[in-house]
Image 1 (spheres, helix red, strand yellow):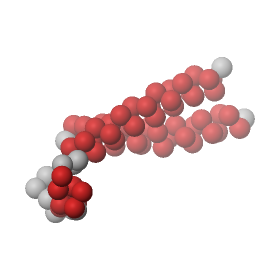
Image 2: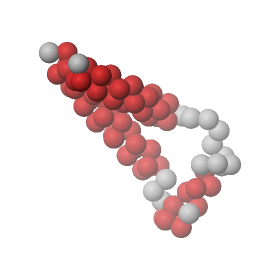
Image 3: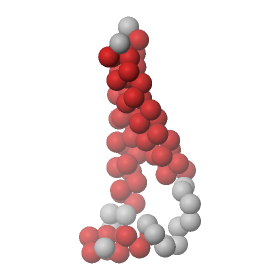
Image 4: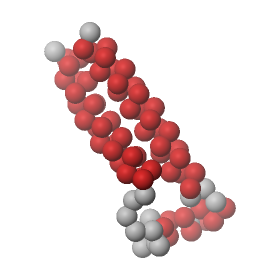
Length: 77
C-alpha cells in the first residue's frame, strides 16, 4: 500500500516538474534563442538569482531526486 501511495506522489511530482521545465523553456524560446543569444542569460546575463518559478522548479527537481531513492528503496523491500 505504501508503494502505491509513493508511486502516485512520485508521478505527481514528475508531472509538476515537466510542466515547470516547459514553462521555463518558454521564456527563452524567442527567435534569438535559436542562434545562441538565449545562452547569454544563463551565465553572465542581466538576471541575478532565481525567480519564483525557478525556485519551484529547483524544489521539484530535488523532490523528484529524493523520491526516486525513496520509491526504489520501498519497492525493493
